[in-house]
Amino acid sequence: ISMLHEQSSEIAQGVDEGAGLHEEQGAGDQGLMFGYACNETPELMPLPIHLSHRLVERLTELRKDGTIPWLRPDGKSQVSVAYENGKPVSITKVVIATQHNNMLDQYGDEKAEHDFVESEVIKKVIKPVLDKCGLPYDESFIVNGTGRFVFGGPEADTGLTGRKIIVDTYGGYAPHGGGAFSGKDPSKVDRSAAYMARYIAKNIVAAGLAEKCEVQFSYSIGVAEPTSFYVKTFGTSELSDEALTDIAGSIFPLKPGGIISHLKLKYPRYRATAANGHFGREDDLFTWEKTDMVDALKSAVAERN
Image (cartoon, rainbow, N blue to C red; front, side, top):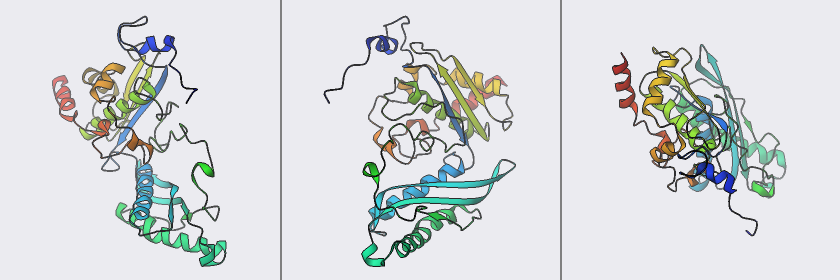
């Protein structure tokens, strides 16, 4: 605690309104940020990351309700999906790593212990989630690929903070600017602009204006206006990308101060982002997941036509 100190005044004057070279609140750093949405799932997220989150949520649910009492908190998942013509057609591989109690006394050796863990996770976690999806799937699942997972958390493997940028976003399905979210207040556009980019993309898809949508920002430290902004729909919209970029830029706030205010990012809402991703969430705390700009987008399109 004795090592904590104030932010550099030279950085602070770039984000404090009325200070520095510009009167408006500027970006807390330079960088680029991306947002994405598609119509593959009800949450308008890519299917692979959607399924990955559902799997780990089920692990947590069954651990907490006692259905699988030997599960421990550490765990993660990975899902591979086959696509044809841009549409998901099958699930080709599921990987689950889940911490568990030491059960050698009960099962005698590590192979018997692993076989039990594997069968229970497949039966109670993996198949129920995949069956809801409705796509065919390969049953050659990988559960605890090293064979055993008793020691977990920071005790076993440190170095997590700020490094899980892909599982926090779109599972590698969309570009990422490289800036982590965790540990940053909303003056850092790595976090706030990535949330706004998702918000814009999700509302465009929810409005039926595109099947897929990518939004990109870039900023300079201390400057409010983004240095670049575009909307890309991969040929899935009747409108041009240039038209959607103009429309989105006219109705969504793009400056840091406006983003923070519109999404209410100064309110305590970040604890829930520590697990299960920042996007595709239904909790009201996730203001950037709301589709409350659909009507405004449709009106703007109608006026343009």
